[in-house]
Every structure is written in C-alpha cells, then in structure tokens.
Image 1 (cartoon, helix red, strand yellow):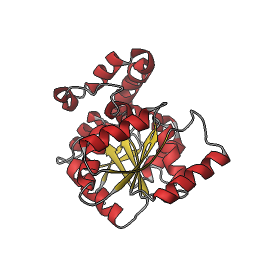
Image 2 (cartoon, rainbow, N blue to C red):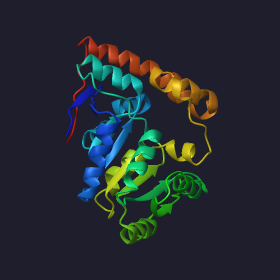
Image 3 (cartoon, one colour):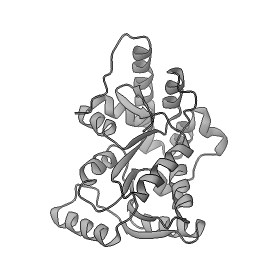
Length: 256
C-alpha cells in the first residue's frame, strides 16, 4: 500500500486517481473487503474532535485526499506525486474502468428517488455498467430488521463495489461497522457524488477544482446547509495545521 501522510492525526494515503483506481480494481478482482474514506477538510476536522472517527479513518483500506489542502500538506512532506482524488470523479472513473472487467455496483444512500436517478444516469453514461442493487436508507440507524434486509439484498447481489452516500461522518461509521457484516467487496463513502451524478446538485466547474476554493462554489449552492461546515471548520483546520507544521503540537495517528 502507498504511504500515508499525517494530517492532524488522520493518515491520508499519498496517491493520485490512477493509482487509487488500480488498487481498487485489483482488490475487487481478489474479492478483498475494505472501505475507502474520501477525505476533505471537513472530515479531517470532524476526526480531530472524535478519536473513534480518527481510528476509523486510520484503519481504512484507503483514505484518499479529496480536499486540495490535504494534497498541499502531502507535497510539503515530500510526496510530490500526490494528487487530489475527488469523490465524484473517483466514482465515475471506477465505474468506467470496471465495465470491461464486469464489475458490479451497489448504491446505498441519498434521499427519496436519488439512487434510482443515479443508477439510470451511470448506466446511460457507461453502457454495460452492472448495478447489482440499490437502497435508500432512513435518516437514522438501521433497525435489526432493516439490517437483515440489507444483508440479504447484498448477499444476493455480491457487488464488487458498494457506494455509500450518506454524508460525513455517518458514512465512515457505517462502512467501519458494516464492512465485516455485508457480502460486498470494497465500500466507498462518496457523499455528494450521489446528488451530483443524479442531477440534483451541479458539480463545480473543472477549472476551480484544483484551486482549493471549490468549497466556495458549494457554499454558494447550498448556503443554509453548508455555512457552518465551511465557515467554522476551515479556520479550525488552518490553525491546527499551522501548529502541526511548526511542531508546536503533535497529532498521533491512532489505529487502535
């Protein structure tokens, strides 16, 4: 596996899109299990405040740099080939590369009707794409009956990739808890990718994605939902990164 860089106690793998896709498709071909955290600044700050969430990230198969600031820190640490792995783009690329390999996908998340729209959009974009199943979960913890139903659906489908779109940190907790319980290959928490590819939310223009200011575009689109995340968490992230880079504070990468 590629090395990790410590970002406020979260170990983020030093990867790019191509290396991540190669690793995931190889793991799927071996029917390996594991989960992938797609990590932005908001998720790092959430993990900073929650030791259990931090451990979940550090026990992942992969934790990839969704946020550009995470890439900048990796490059400062000497990992010059590190590149952003944006969740919605990762979903498209894994789907595209998986078609000729016969990979199958399960979609779990979104609001009412989102997974159906998402499945249709992905299959239209990638003819031959196998959608093995879909489920729209409730906005709460699953009951025992609902868990049994999900386990049966997944056992029947046996997907290579299980996509989770229920936002951070719920999706990371879900993946850590359910990876050993479901007969699925690789779980990936991609949050906003569901709404973007289903056509519910517009993706940011390509030119803004490498700049580190994509958060401003998302805030413009959904100010009531996202203002707290960006306007409160971004300054916290910057302050703690300065403490880490100057050596004034240590941020251990907990794994147990």
